Length: 221
Ligand SMILES: CSC[C@@H](O)[C@@H](O)C(=O)COP(=O)(O)O
Ligand SMILES: [Zn+2]
Image 1 (cartoon, rainbow, N blue to C red):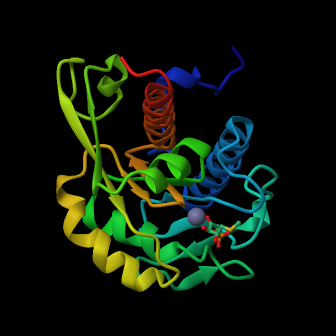
Image 2: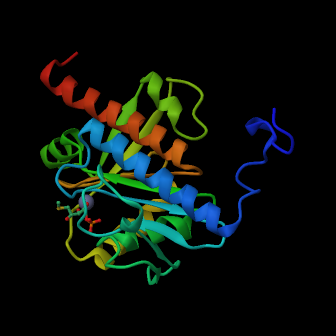
């Protein structure tokens, strides 16, 4: 090993990073996550938005209206905890307030992901209930504090609204009890985690479970 370098696994990542480097890592995480969501088909056209909270409280979030599978660094903008732009060009996601709301409620949340999958869209439009209930799935263990399939988790369904501030008031009282994220009816899912990798794992777990529900409606037990 060259003099002065340390094995990557010994670095106390990300605490060693300066503010600038932390921003670069956040942007990189968002770009890679956008590509991954796109590969799954969860961010068609310009749908979806992604964010990452930095240690100084700034939130790196995708610019409104761009394709999340082809993000470039300048399509990530910094906003403060109230959603006001503090760095970058253009308008942040139209749904920025749904991200800042999650960060305000969950101090440990470091990444928020929003996608528009076929399963979340179709199922939420087909159901009148205010939640989807999941029991007996092994993949429930992807959610925090779950160690067995032998459990029941609830995924709230909220009605869609183009007025995001008003939508926030509907979501707000539901947040403390949320264990999986939530679905906006006919629109898509919101999930979060204490790192981008955890948020991605939750999104993949949730989408798998939604796809199972959809399949179960075609092939009842
Ligand atoms: C392609 S329409 C989707 C939008 O209305 C919205 O729901 C969405 O997810 C993306 O909005 P954006 O402002 O780009 O973050
Ligand atoms: Zn959306």
